[in-house]
Every structure is written in structure tokens, then in C-alpha cells.
Image (cartoon, rainbow, N blue to C red):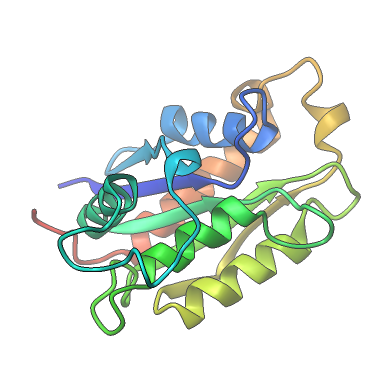
Length: 187
């Protein structure tokens, strides 16, 4: 049985290098792992307890929770916006953290990777995403990291899937997640 990994991308831009990195993950997933790229983070309203009421949760947020609950692990792709996590990714973590005590993130293996223009590849944002996800209940895979610097130059003419070094690193990340995810969800 294949380990199902849900990919969430913290950039809404169509040409985002993090989105391209996630697309590469879908294509490069090794045997025994399947990566699904979640579409629709832009439609999810900002988290608000007033609208997070059983029976009337916004459909887009309910869908995110349902898909995440059915995944064996999550892989977040985070760019760095002003030195921190993008709002869309933080919002997804907030929605996934509820209902308190029974969230789709509870003990779910989760890793964070990404690329950014700066020389460190977005490590601050990725660290913030790990922190938020861990507080929200995820089992953060702290040893699985991939921060690719200089995205604007590196991927100016090359998609990440065609960058041999990045493809190998990304395949290794997915393999590590697969190896650490021992009990696939059977939904």
C-alpha cells in the first residue's frame, strides 16, 4: 500500500517556484509513496471560530480537513514572505488544528520544505511553519529539511523537476517521509 502525502503550497501565484517544487514532488514520488497537491487554499476564509461551527463550516475548509484526515502525512512547501510563513499556509494550519483535540493534524507526520530568493532558501519561514504545525498537533519530522536558495535565478529557465540535484533531494525527502510513516490511513 502506498503512503499518501498531501502537499500544501504557501504561495498562490501560478508561476510560484514552490508550486513548481510541489509539482515536481508529485512526479518524482518514489514507489510506495503518492503525493497529492491540494488545490483550493485561496478559497478558504481566514480562520474564525464564529464560522467554525459544526454543520456550517465553510465547504472549502471542510474539504481541506477531509483530505488532510485521509492522508498519511503532509508536506508543506513554504516560501518566505518578509522573513516568515505566508498567511495562506498559516491559515491552512489554523483550520487543520480544529476541532481542538480531534484535528486532522493530530499526530500526523508533517515535513516542511521550500525555496526562496534569499541565500538561505526560506529557512525562517519553514521553521515558523514547523513550529505552528507542531503546536497544532502534527508530528513534525524535524530532521527532514530542504531549503533551496536563489529560486529566482536557479529556476529562471529550469523547472525543479529538471534540476538533477533538486530532483534527487526532493525524491529523498519523499522517501524519508514514506519510511517514517509506518501506518497508512485506510479510508
